[in-house]
Image (cartoon, rainbow, N blue to C red):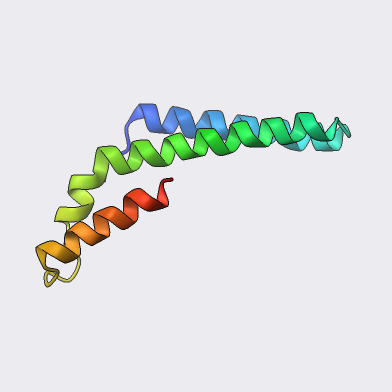
Amino acid sequence: MEYNAKIVNRLKRSKGQLEGVLNMIAAEKDCAAIVTQLSAVRSSLDKAIGLIVAENLVECVQNNQNGQDTEEEKIQQAIKLLMKSR
């Protein structure tokens, strides 16, 4: 699979947000502010997952590991990938 700069940048941004949350906890910041930032991290990661699935879905489905999956099984695998991203 190919991961482009957009995905890498989004993950780096998520990493920075998470480090910020750790700093907030260390500084004993308000619980509501910490939860708000954690929600932002989760949203950022959800978007990264969506990008990875969307940009690599065809490759994921076409790359049949054991060569024996039927078309229906490939479709079900694709659906599972999409559901995990939600």
